[in-house]
Image 1 (tube, rainbow, N blue to C red):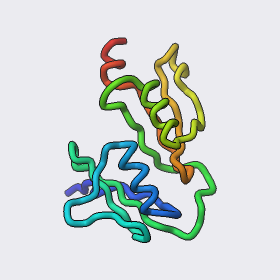
Image 2 (image 1 turned 180 degrees about the vertical axis):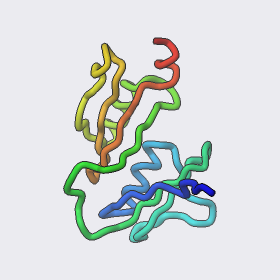
Image 3 (image 1 turned 180 degrees about the horizontal axis):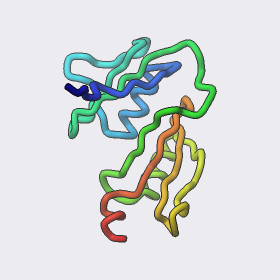
Length: 131
């Protein structure tokens, strides 16, 4: 017997604001018949392509240390560097630039969302195939 991941939960100070930001970042949507609204303490969003879900849950305490779990993201289109620029443009913060950690341009960039939750942006599949 095994289990599967139902959804990934992320603690938040403002679940609604976080869900809206991540929807813009990832292209996720609200579930049909279950829209997220300001003031909701739990906001679930869905990747319409894969079915993956992220659940933002309000908690009273702020983030204080490095995440023990984080998401590694690949651009669906374009390059890693274009995606990093786009995400910084919508409010992400660069935490660490590791683009050259395994050779010129081969690594990743660590970013943080507006509440400080860290995630990484990797090279796209097209970039990986080209090298």
